[in-house]
Length: 59
Image (tube, rainbow, N blue to C red; front, side, top):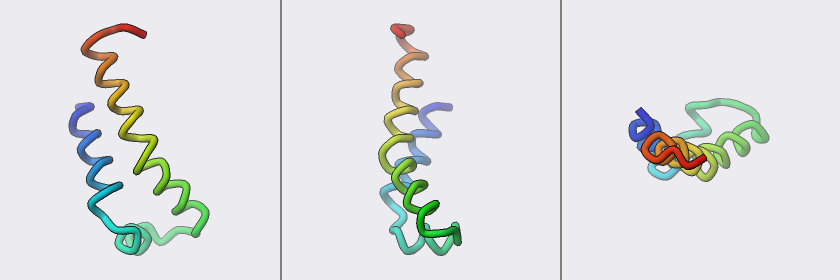
């Protein structure tokens, strides 16, 4: 499941353009910018760490 979530976050963050995402979400500018930052940079890193933790319980 983490691999699916990682692929979805990468797809939503890098394949979709900002214009398409803004039209789909129809939210305020501040909320959209926060969402875009999270989906593009924070989510893939967090999901990758969860995936690694599931394979090698280091933390």
